[in-house]
Length: 241
Image 1 (cartoon, one colour):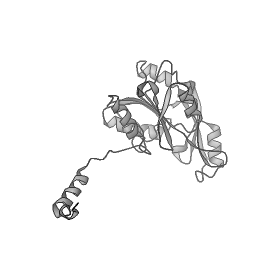
Image 2 (tube, one colour):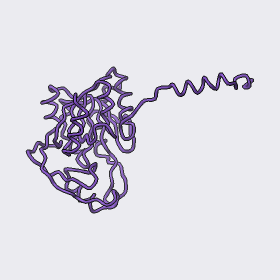
Image 3 (tube, rainbow, N blue to C red):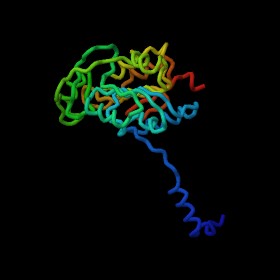
Image 4 (cartoon, rainbow, N blue to C red):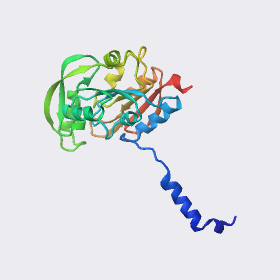
């Protein structure tokens, strides 16, 4: 083939125009989890999903559900840190924003451990102590312990989603993820997608994948759709047919 006839100014120009005009998908999540979830949901005809975002933290930055908010979706954002809760309220006006924690059982007040780095806040004393005593997150300490109400996923669905499971359940609860997921009544409420942080530090400060969530969900009719190393994305097996 004579390549020289293709190597001209017009073709170079068209090549660069094509690529600069291409629309790239924008992600707000830590590792593109929102784009992966969007690809799956779009494939089954859902463009404006509902969601429950547990441990929302920032309403936009590194957030698994903000992309869907921009597409017209809506849901529940649960964030126990009052500072970030106010930020979420200002930026996610269509969402139900709650200044609460989510756990396996309801409690009027539970200890919420606020760490030096806000993204490491947790309801787990063991997690807080390990973070403060370890070095894997740098120098950390428990800055304060405040009392925050705990609600359940089942309760949120019943009260705010009219007994209808959300399309997406996103869980980032610093040591509480597995307990929260186990508490969901999957016989009654089946989110189409469950995204959970599954990368953890072990007692020796080494990164490891948490396997409990995967084993539990696989035994309850979900399949691992994708893994970004930090988070694992599971979908209801019935929707894969």
